Structure formats: C-alpha cells, structure tokens
Image (cartoon, rainbow, N blue to C red; front, side):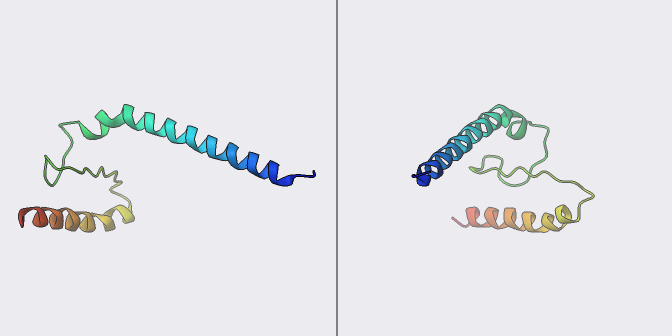
Length: 87
C-alpha cells in the first residue's frame, strides 16, 4: 500500500508480456497460413504477378462495404501499375 506505483508497473509489465505472447502467436499462425493465403495458383489476382507487395482481399459479395471498396482497390492497382511502367 505504501508503493502503489510498484503494482502499476507490475501490471504494465504483465500486459506488455501478454501482448508480446499474443503477437508471437499471431505471427506463428500467419507463417503457417502463408502458403494458403499467398501461394495458391488457382486464386484470381490482378496486377503484377512478380510484384513486391501482395494484398489479400477477403470479400463478401453481399456486403455493401466490400462492394464499395472494389473500385478503390482497382484504382489503386491501376495506379501502381502505371507508376511502375513510367520508370
């Protein structure tokens, strides 16, 4: 009771450690799922097949937000394709 800052520091350290454990678990899971997300040759794609960056889109065709994003994503890919061909 004389040093409440010790409890606060301890809780802060515990929270940080728990976040690190969760981050490591997520990274491990992403590493395991990488082939499924990025390497399936049957998945449709747009853009440069040898590009440095990959965007994986999860879409629900009945979702208004997903439909609204589609033109923006297409515009982004097109702008990246134009900027690469300009060099």
